[in-house]
Image (cartoon, rainbow, N blue to C red):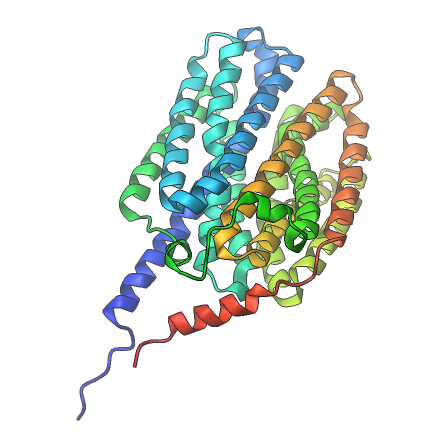
Length: 424
């Protein structure tokens, strides 16, 4: 009897192990960013109620804005660096930076120092998502890139759900939320140092003679410009919605007449819907096309956001509408990222995704700022939701301008298939 032939070789087993670490560690990194995204919105009512450091609504808006300025800086800067130096080292360094400065936030002695610490932590935080999404996209075959992006981003909203649950438990002891994030972040960075492999696509693109490095200015040339403009506008609108809602939803709900516990619970419902929407959106997009799915998602988001402007007497109806808002708003934004990872080649993918995230982060600054101004003026509800619905319409129109396909995708799929075949 002939000896049994093993179904997998040691090399394949090792590759599977490295791939598993990539998936897990990138997902956890994005979870940390999702946790941080919601933490400020969850504690703003408490900070204002207790007058922590003498903080006012205007101060809270400034802190939220500067946090997002830092995130935008990190997102813009990381793309070219990740394409030049590698994904791994940039991701680890970014996690360490935001973790250390997050631990210092509760120790701030003034509103100014509170804001500065959030600004610096934001720089590290902003770099995490583009690099994680790039590594996950390069880990998956081209035909599953939508699911790669949406799967990674389930971590984002899982983190937001965790923050919402913790915020309901710790109430006035909000400092615990920052200590938990900082400590866990440093532990994750240590594990990444020992277990996170470099992206094989990056290594191949860096060493291949037929894959020259593409500068950022290449994105401004006719071959990429149409897609670039549509992506940047859609990302701007999408992140405006994500950050505007997560920062101010509890306050908007409270202004509408809902009690604070109900208002904070809606943040939990919103992000739970986000997780469900990401799983559903990636599945549909890989089968029906990323562009068409994104258009559909933005369209439904418009309807849900407009509906939230109506005061609802039934908690069940409110929960359903907020849940569906999370399903479609958050995954619409991530599907824009999925389009980027599918459209651009590996040599410029990090730069393209970093630019989309960085320009989108400007929207993440504008959203909380405008919403905060509406809240300060006493018209947060319903005008905050009218504003969000209008933004979703603009996101829909931006996606409408995008090219439907990507010529290089088939080539990458063929190369990936050849690379996956065992040697004979």
